[in-house]
Image: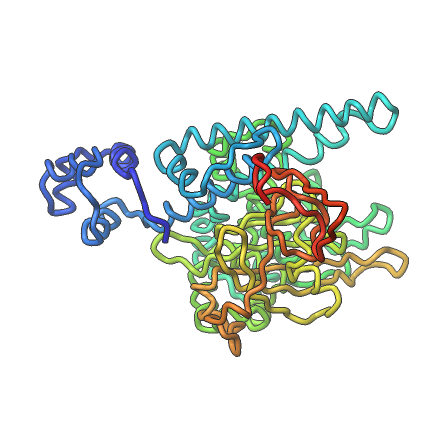
Length: 481
């Protein structure tokens, strides 16, 4: 665990947020007020005993703070690899200190950098527009609102506690049953809102999966479709109808910058609730632990798809009752990421391709097989990475079949809890494969799959020598190799 530094101001701020005086918090911790005052002014070191007392008194987990600092530091490092900062090689421990001492400043810097990226894209798109290739809004309108929403879920560790509690309470109050959930939900919306659920082929309306008509109070669901998908769509509609105010409050707290981002996030929050209703938090997590996170067994137990189970596993981060922190990703055959969420420090490429050494690509060559990989990222952290293909088969013969690879992974320190670690030597460094975020930000020299040189390094050209690895580059602006 990364060492926590400069905690005093953060402890003081959290104490103020909870409405506690120094004397009141000191009493809860069974220490003197003067001792707490020294802690808040970083004049006294924090030992394990005091940290434990603080966690209990403030109902927090300091591990969350360290993991958040790691994520923010890695985001800063990725941003600082941009050519605009050429020569600003800042060590990762310095970036962690920046995040620790000035978290809001770090956030503002990242917001500013993303605004700069948007301007760069707008400039490029404008140039292409003048040349007659595409309109200005083609890229700007389609990409960045989604990025803003992804950042929101990333900041929340992909866990929305208010929606989890709402889904769990509704499930228990209505005495829903996992084995009969579609019928339970259908009857619930009929009794509570007068909504009829009707199967529809949608032959004249493209490839819709569901459509709610508020005028005749009918929820049309695609036929054919799986029970899991139909249950999900009904649960989604319940989220918008019954928990509208709760979702709007989460949107207000998210402080998103555009109406498009708010609309995307509203859908994302309703989707989150739907998954939480199909797989209620406590029951699902207990089953996941009992089955050692066996995705196939969980899918059969809850009647949900492989992808739904993987996505749900990435959300199990309730304070005081956390599951294994996973990353979750969905990738197409071209390497485009269409879904990505993470409760880990694993970070994804924002622009450009995904590392070709990551096993999500290999999954397409072994359809239906769960692939395992021990992979180390450039920040030194090692992950157990799982990947498997999923296909949507309920389409017309003449329609293209949607194919994806689902990736799920956790840090190696949690790998022993997973059934997928069986037979792997988690202590063998030779079994670990180095991967990166993307070629543009990866500085590994010995990668045979490198497609581009790193943005932060100058290419080194020697016409009298040829390396087995593409793109030789300098260590720094000084010219060292």
